[in-house]
Length: 395
Image (tube, rainbow, N blue to C red; front, side, top):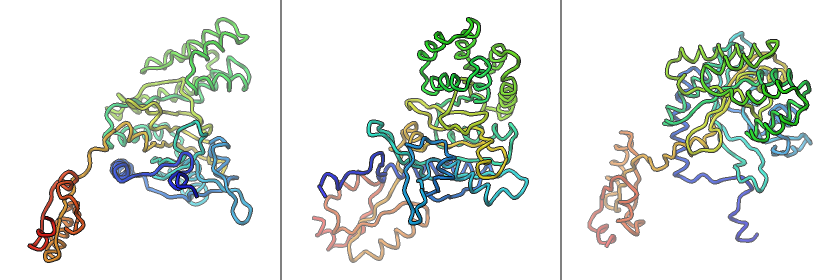
């Protein structure tokens, strides 16, 4: 094995060093405590799942799945998301009462990357799933909890955009007529290639009125006024149910108070997660070029595991949230007790007392310290418990 290869990692994999680990732990704790306060219970699922179940249900492209064979010849995948595994668990073990399930998770997911991609192949998601509730109140609760969780984590400047995949499908199929045309135009939206979208619309064999409707569709972004603008674009009420969903959601979010100020409509919003069936949303923060969180309603996913029920949820990308927070420097204070052999017991007792008071304390034998001055830069306070022999050693 070459020395270079010894220090390399598989493509897209990353080490988490102490400073980043502490920042992740701190942020994760704030968010998970908020989720628990809203009545969500945490769950764990295995990292390995069957390809035929979770792998095919996940909506992640097949080329992004990490696959392997078990000893029986079954194809397994490293879980590419958490929604599908939780849907599996809910359908097989938990959905026995006529009550919605409120489940939460914090786990790593795995998606293979191309060499030129430069994106992580392993990253942590923390999120919730509300399963068994088809009401718009569940969608509103999910959005309100997401906003509250981000605020508890310390994020100040962010915006949540809400769309409805059902509206896009109804609106496009009414004008374009075929699924193939809908898919092509939707791809432009997913890539946020609005120039390409406009150029493609110009080439379509449609009336000038329908072309203008498709162009005007791109302006459906903003506040409550977007609802009326969307209604004006409809013909034969195709898409009106989705607009009514958005109106009901807006009223719910306003009743949450300040939450509504974080929310804007973006009816051009689409997702690569093809199992979404209704409301969907994304969160963007300053200085981060990708969504730091996303979610939506997926009423047909559980049918793949034998249950017919509504569901909605969201996932926060912890790495992107930390990039937006940029608070790695906010380390918790640590005290360091430097001791020599003759005062070792005293040092141990003092450390135990301070740890019982909730402080972080490091114990360091004087013989292991090469530069005491360097310690003062690392720790909030240095406590010297060094006898005469120790002082001589330090010199």
